[in-house]
Length: 131
Length: 242
Image (cartoon, rainbow over all chains, first blue to last red; front, side, top):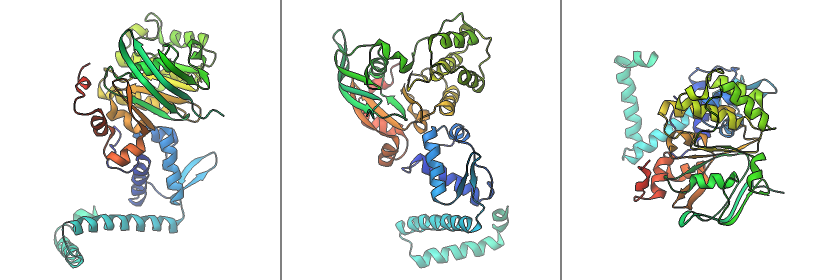
């Protein structure tokens, strides 16, 4: 079954984000061919207009390259991939900090909390993270 | 130039005293997958049949691809009826051959490709196909025509979620928005929502909303259903009735 889409972000954007996450996690490698329009349409149950916008979005983010007549490929440009990794990191931090601030935590409390979490993690939870 | 594929101009349709559509005006651009949603009796099928030229408006004008939608608009419009669409004693192959013989724009290659994708066996009699199988065959027949407009009347009605999902996959795999526009009526909005570009919401024969799905999602957040319930209001008890 296709993944469900949630929230207010357009569906093409949500799919582009999923693909970016897969690239950063290494599930899709630099230079890999991305699915065809039809494959992605079937996978997510979206129409080809949406898939084309996904690929336009990835192209604009310098994450993918179109090779004429062959399809769309993940970029092999390491600088662009590093930028993507950095951008995803910043996005996650931003949304985490926003949530924490809404609950009334100060920057010091947040930083301290993260520090302590990792200190604890070295004793207990580190192995899970490494898996 | 004609930028709208479908145009309704103050269209009303009455069946005797019953008002099915009430002074409806809208335009649909080409190259989109468009859902017509609304409770039963809201006028969805009437809207589709008027577009197909199978019904004539009581008042107003229906223009398809720049031409008035009369019976002969069938050369521009491929219409999949909700009720049975092909002879029950035909085999799947015979149904394809029959369509190929009556429609000059029929693409037999695409039809065969779609049959394989939908796992329809060619020697099966239409009569012996499951309910989902019949719908899939009807979709193959309707979508294999190179007509600029494809109308699918309730392709998801009365089917279980797995079959609905497979029908939507068949739709998105073979629709070519650069060549064709698809209009689908349904009241099963949850599965079809990601496959749609635009939505027309109908209630009591009037348009409550016509917008890009993206805009609706942007305004209402999660899924079309919540939004649908909202626009259709709390008194849409007709939603439950089959």
